[in-house]
Length: 326
Image 1 (cartoon, helix red, strand yellow):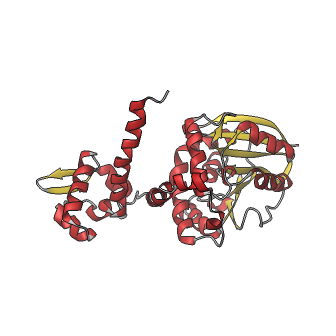
Image 2 (spheres, one colour):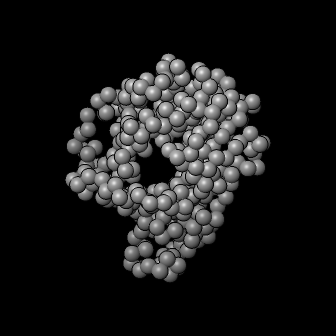
Image 3 (spheres, helix red, strand yellow):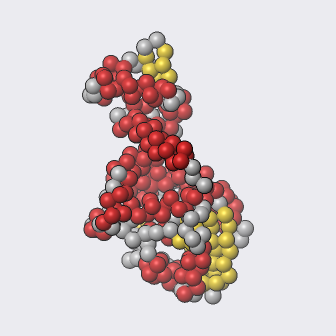
């Protein structure tokens, strides 16, 4: 049960979140790099007021994101490593996504009151956004990749179609596990450029084919043994997903399988915790998206020619659903 104390403390953490987002907005960790600077120097670099910058730096020090010594501030090692633009481990996508969400979450109450403005999602895809978003998906996918590859390769992946592949992180893990598999990555050109950037020097690259296109407009091809549909289900409404499931069935060999990875919730929509919160994220960031239960998804798959369902729990409230072509 959510107590009053937990309720108020959770809201109070917005203060901490805003402080961290301010650090990203002013590129505090990139400016500091591995140097030490005074608050006045930081204010000059960021073109901000000293009486604003100094309490921000002090708060970041208290949160152990910065260090303070004899009037000078420096980045904590883990902040430099992941949040400094000049670091080889810089999490470019994650940084972008956290700042991108800042303004959107402020709109939550208005969207709940008035509904989604579907016109916001019309028009061509923004390559700049897609590039950063794809890097963010690579950062996000890393902790799941090995578990997913282990589950998928219990059966040979064969000819493998990764729909909305983004950075190709999951496909890469599967190809490293299954030395005979070959993967086709279908996504927007910008996303596939990121996949090339990440994997082109890897030994698996000769077994990857890039297929630029749109999930609804581009032909998938045929004779695939496995179709992978990861973190796409929640972007679309049931009718849109059924249209794509029919295309997947046509692309698969007889007895081929579709593998879905997503947040699957219970029928009452309340669990797991991560899936319930992600449903609100879909309200904010998609035109028609929502989260689905395993039962809802299996029903959609049954209507489009799939059966023999298998469920697998993953980390952080996510799950995998496998179905076979009839």
